[in-house]
Image (cartoon, rainbow, N blue to C red; front, side, top):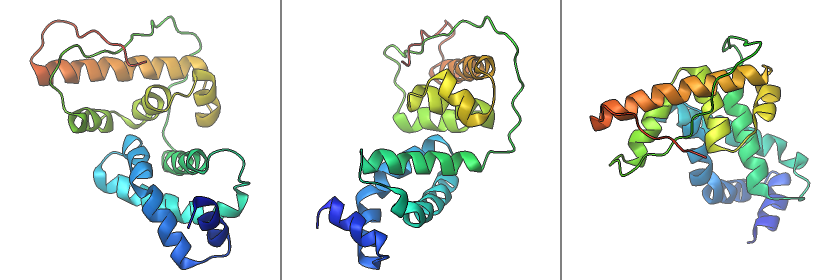
Length: 182
């Protein structure tokens, strides 16, 4: 059964199609959940809740554009809802330079980097994930989180600073790590 048929059957509340949709997208969408969660178990909860939401709202998918992109946005929005009470320090104006993040020849496993991102304070992790990992602009992030673009830039700079310190500590590097994540 093709994806279009699976989606059509999900819109008719067919349990077999819902299961097939889950099997097709759970792994990719779990990766999205990991970026916005504090832990593996939180990511599992977000995946579960997000899939319920996807199946609940599947009639809103108009078959225009990518279903995966639509499902990813639903997952991100679901994960962000859990942080609606996170308090951001509003910055009126900021001259913070945008540091780029590159890790040159550092032996760090992806799981280790992901754990470092998950350990960031909520507001820094959310902005970092939206900007660096999912490619949202500062303007889009400001709209999503209902904060100013200066605040998004400030939180991103602080997230990068914390990650730099964590990477340096992990690798035993006492010199400044060159960053270039985008």
